[in-house]
Amino acid sequence: MTLPSASLLAQGLALGVLTGGLYALLSSGLTLYFGVMRIVMVAHPAFLFLAAYGTYFLHVTTGMDPLLTMFITAPVFFLLGIGIQRLLVARLAPESLATMSVLLTFALALLIEGGLGVVATGSYRSVTVDYASSSLRMFGVSFPVDRLIGFGIAAVTLAALFLLLRATRFGRALRATIQHRTAARLVGIDTERVTGIGFGLGLATAAIGGAVLALITTFFPAAHWGWIGKLMAIIVVGGLGSIQGAAIAALLLGVVEGVVLVTAGATPAALLFYLFLFATLLLRPQGLFGGRLAERF
Figure 1: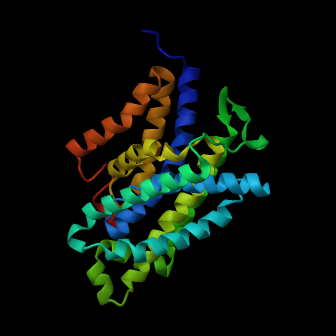
Figure 2: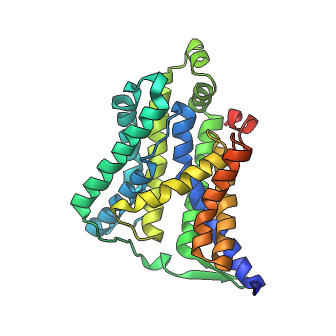
């Protein structure tokens, strides 16, 4: 067996960090849904690719830079999220919320996939811009510019989300709702309103993540099924309901995936998410960073 060179390991590590940042952004919405409402949002990756298609069509029809499209799609998705929560999720019976939310959001994913298939056909799409197709080389390691952009957007978005949750009145209300909904009501918090906004924020992160995905990968209507397993593994490994835990788990899995990808190939790299998921459920069901960290959000 030939050991990989140091430069190859460094390349894998660099790509893993950048990809891990993207995973953290893409999984943050899932953490919000579960943290606020205890629902499993199977349709989140479908909304990611719905946003990617929105980015694609805005770019093709208006010539708008794909990164600027998120200033249109994010508010639209935020309002869409509030509407979905009020009209669909809020009507689910509390005693069967987890099970029914899976069925409901699975149906939403199929509806989005079918709609995209009718409007955009099943052809692969991509958004190509000159500035994102090059690479920077530092210390003998190549950094794709599109991945650097994605990592930067993820860092800014997650920092803004963290500040919103930690330093604002709404954030305190949201955290109180997460920790104990009944107690939050008793101190005068409108938990229904907070829940709706929390769901809207989750879909807004999907809009931002979709714009980044459109920039760095090709996509087609059924592409979301390839992401749901990875994103679910990240939030379970990180600890359900913990944004910090999901971000740390995303970076950890991204780095491990990057190193395995350059040393052992794509198939072992794809399997490691499920190995981490299985090991977490077996050894530490609350996740690596569950418990006290999750309670603090």
